[in-house]
View 1 (cartoon, each protein chain N blue to C red):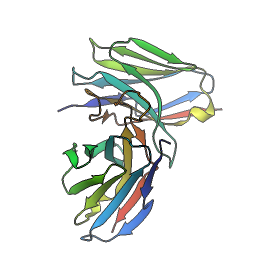
View 2 (view 1 turned 30 degrees about the vertical axis):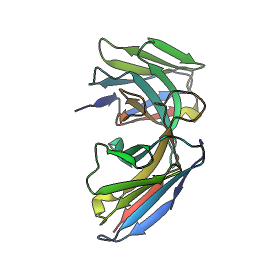
View 3 (view 1 turned 90 degrees about the vertical axis):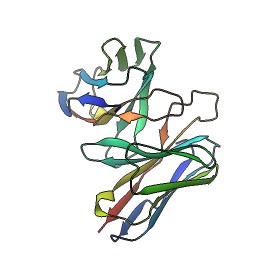
View 4 (view 1 turned 45 degrees about the vertical axis):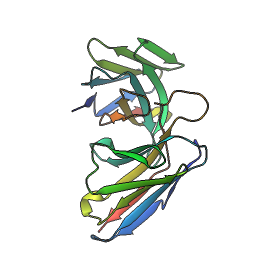
Length: 112
Length: 116
């Protein structure tokens, strides 16, 4: 069935360094790829998304890249700050209003 | 927060009892979803709805049923709760009514359910 694999499961970086989280999806018909940030005890919050007709998207310190041929996409956070510490989830979907398949999550820790 | 509320926010119940969780939205979103979140599994879709009285199963639907008799409410029912259903349950919506794409999902605050 449809599957999204996310790596690494934990990531620790020093403040100011970059962080990269990678996801691979199995369904070649997937065309929408959001990333969510979830702080402890809070709801997942959408931070950035990308659609299959675009290879890269940036929003300030956050960027997402998509390689449709290899069926993987990545989240890049530059100049990390302690407030970036959270669990990050990738997801993939193949049609509007349809199912989001989530990765298992990456716990990012940014040390001051 | 896309006008989504969930009730109750916390519930402790016993094995074998029925439980109903409510998701309420105020902005006329067409699509609504129920997910459960467990350590090591991320978020997994239980059921979703694409309109009043229109629902479909997700990847972990066994032991759960849903109903949507009006646009603003999507109910998740555990007919006979089991300890394996202890989890955090999130409701989500898409089609925010602003003319945006319908695949962007926004989450409610969550319900923490403990089945003893």
